[in-house]
Figure 1 (cartoon, rainbow, N blue to C red):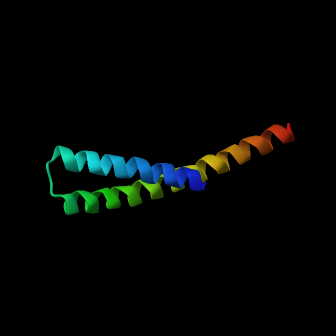
Figure 2 (figure 1 turned 30 degrees about the horizontal axis):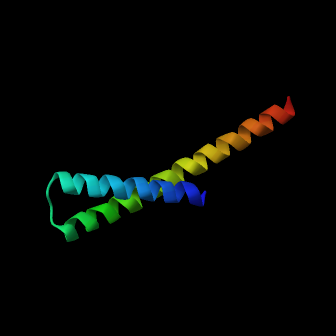
Length: 66
């Protein structure tokens, strides 16, 4: 789960920096928006990871009950 959160944070940071550079913002503004995007994408990846793990566990339980 931690690797999913870190992956989400990295993706969010890169996207935040990329959009900031494309809009030609100042460096502090780019870092602020990149950190916000990093946090948001890490939380989304955590949410998705939990759903994915629960569905995999249900699938595994269904296979064992058959």
